[in-house]
Image (cartoon, rainbow, N blue to C red; front, side, top):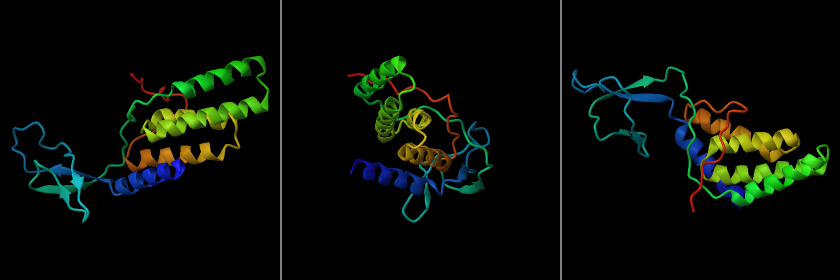
Length: 175
């Protein structure tokens, strides 16, 4: 059930953002205003009409193909139980680093935390967990699927995604 909700949410985000490959620029601002040629954030109604509280006359400018840098975002979530599980399995692996069952267990622990981070829209951190899971267990199909899904989310919002090794830890959670 949880997976269906996450997939539906990700599909909704992807569908909503798939048409976001164009910028709206306000051309009706006085010449002395610093924001004259800056992009205007706008929302889109059901029929695709662009709406902005400061915009009266706009032109649609094709996106120049450059992506903005990724940033850490999302909602802080309590991952302490997942962190403890990961640490526990990592400690066991120190004693027996070649144990395949421990590698699979650690892969599953990273995948579980990755799902929670994905639900809280911490995509950069989740991507790191799914990559770790896949590295530990190359047969982890769920991790592969989520890596592709998160990369598609970043592409749909015209942002770069974190390269392997530059993913941040989860956002701190305050109780």
